[in-house]
Image (cartoon, rainbow, N blue to C red; front, side, top):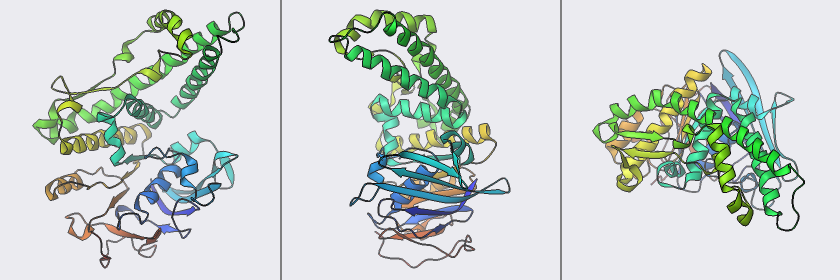
Length: 375
């Protein structure tokens, strides 16, 4: 799958001019604040994903209005083409379109599979558990879009149950109401955990050999999801035990929204001993394995994109990452350095004040672009 062009409207600082894309590797280059990350973020939103920097949709609209934005794109997949569009308004939220017809989030995710890597993804190893839960759910959605229905079901159950617990001191729920939502929480939560376990198993098929091949410092990397071993009966009993504390606190204390993914190296916590460079490479391996898992599950090569992929890395590390990029039909890498120094040739998109200076649509062939004071 690849995009032929992307056209943002009122998305951060980006110009509304179309950005033409060809096959292969693209370097999105420019100084800081010129729109490199914004362009990759617009592509992610168009692909049905949330902002990889965890921005709210309102944050993606122009700072002087915060009312609406849209991103459209022409994509090519398996010899056929489609036009997709995402629109967001303050009052209406997100809406997706395929051609002129409305489309579901699931339909867009299936049409435009993509894997994104950003500096924020270091949280997958060294951050709070929330970041790792998001990774598990994103992985489950990427491999099995139908998992979205169980995730939504669980979100509704946790919201309804928390609302009952929060107001319990003032207004007790109707007889059986809390029990009903507790059972729904258990059943939907068990489904979410099963999706996570299955997705993690598919992902490990690729991650483990990639880690071994990356060198001895990565061969012992492991990811474990202990909650995935919880049976539905044990989950139900856990909810019963937690209920007195939940009544006092006013929210649910057990379930997939409290789970964690544990990273280790040779049985020791990775976050406590890995260097900054090792963390960067480990997260790259995580995302590379995600790309391969999604490609196998979908039967199509997803787009691969990495924001500031070379920040803080040595020349040898940059060359190693470029050499191990997935064989995607289209790859986007943003950088504040000069791509002409890369050993791997790329089509260069220079960003200046939100405007993409690209070759002509037929210019998917690598081109030499004059330097513009990139540091």
